[in-house]
Image 1 (cartoon, rainbow, N blue to C red):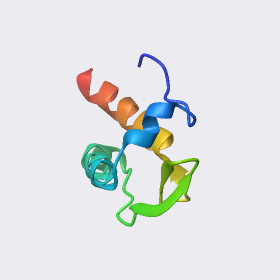
Image 2: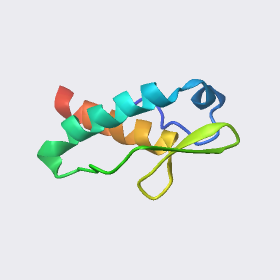
Image 3: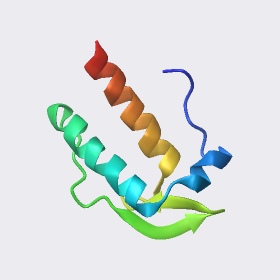
Length: 77
């Protein structure tokens, strides 16, 4: 992993709801072998300073991206 995405990285504002929904689908697929499943996770429409929140504890998009990167690294090994 290069570096974790920080919650205040400005490029996070460029993600759209359909893009985040696609990332959540990837999380569901990559997370299955590890028991990481949030079937109810979705973009909840709320934002903080222009950044979308994900509805599994109102997690930030940065958290989702960091978790996905960890799962991607695991599958590359």
